[in-house]
Image (cartoon, rainbow, N blue to C red; front, side, top):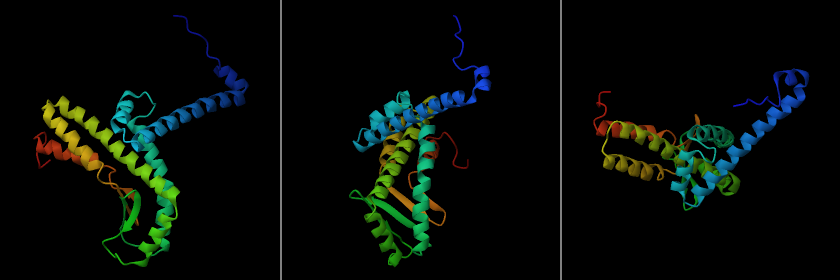
Length: 219
């Protein structure tokens, strides 16, 4: 096999850094576009209820998206929403935990700590007047649940490696799916905004390992 010389060699870079930098940036931009396109495809599948199709594409890698990419994108996109809502909650005097739950296609504010606090009604009004923010919450919630389901499928591979009966693996995946997609909520506190489903797949996996006798309860 004949190795073709690189179009942009180290010497080219030293002689003309601006051209090389532009070439590198174009590669980075193309990769970003591929990721955004893949993420948009995942979001579209989730919005239309095609979760299994999205999972198949995630596992195959054909859309350029993997679990690590989803995890990074979730963390990144949470920042702006978290800053917005935590600053507002502070201004409204909401110094206790507040729950944002999805009900009939909208996000509803509540709290067990001080359910009559006027700040809750004001926060609700802010959400009701801000469909863009509600849409962001929709996307973050759906992607988090999808990510956790993807993690559950990875954990299922570990169960198969441990020779767990196929019926038990199917039951684990079915129950994980039902549980994760039933959460549909966020918690807002002094520590920031958190998605209820975030990290739940790990806890479910630890539970099933104990139930199946793969680890002792003392561990």
